[in-house]
Length: 435
Ligand code: UGA
Image 1: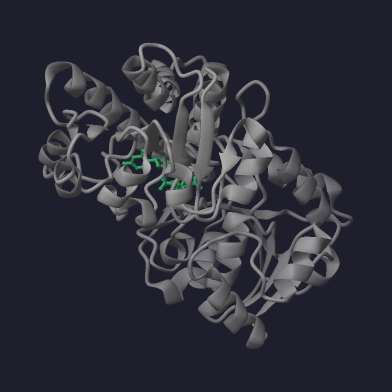
Image 2: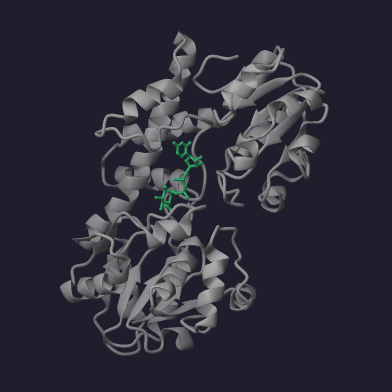
């Protein structure tokens, strides 16, 4: 099948590479000429495990192409996928500017009968609006066949999540178009659910909002566990064994970040309000998350009697989660800002996100090239992102380098046995008894 994709961000690029891998003839289009040049040389603009290997293989087999030309990309395509960003607008609602522009760019070259698939995360009703925009901007009178096909991949495991998805949602009021999109995905052998356009749009938001709420719920319980002397890891394990609850997304810590949960929870809350429904539950999800992001700084302030001036604090990890260099909505940003405001001298380390971190955190912190360089002479260490390298670090070696062996573990990821084996260490996890 010939497929065109507009937008080469996380979703567009992963989808394009995956569809080429399962045998389709894919052309990815982006307005960013520099990015397209890089991609044609098999250089991925994002850090994503496994992506570059598939990029190289599918470029070489000629199943995958990249272009800035809408005309070349869309020409002859049976399916065109829109996968541009829908960032958060100033009022909390999703900003649809890129999507509207992509729809207009596409309209000029759309051939009759081509199916337009929207993968971008969009508020309910947007697919209908995109259909209207395309139809209004087409040179000929065409009835656009539109399908909503939200994406559920996670950064850091984007290729695996795309190639081994748990479900594919196909929303359309055009049965033939839905069947065609189902056929495109057939080689993946993943269960497909066909719904209306609006239900598909809602499934995406409801899924992200539910997962974010699960995280805030366990973080709320974690804070209570600390107050009453329980251990949130045991609580999550005990809860998660009930299949109705499930063990996933019950990892307590410093809150959710990234380009999806924060903006999607806000957008759904906002959309509900516009429809006259107050989803107060989501307001609480967001409130807990805001507080959780600065939890480690509060704990450090508490430990140092409210004074961080002149204290050397090491932050280990900066990315919003491991296996990505993405800093969007990373809890580390707010933490660094607050530590700086309190006069701490902060030195940070991340295996891959330093370049992106510098753009958002700037010189509020200095950047180390290794864990040991970051912790050298530190009064305290804050564990921010659970990279393998950080989880597996030699606690005894780390403590030896520090001025005071005080560790605040925002991801509950250090090995407890290694901690207990060290003398004089002070270890403060989240929602668990300190050591
Ligand atoms: C999320 C969803 O998991 C995907 O299904 C969805 O497709 C994607 O958003 C999207 O809408 O594009 P992603 O943001 O890449 O994926 O990452 P997650 O693995 O879901 O983690 C999000 C945040 O939650 C991270 O900051 C992570 O540290 C935090 N988290 C996750 C927890 O604090 N505890 C947990 O138990 C799980």
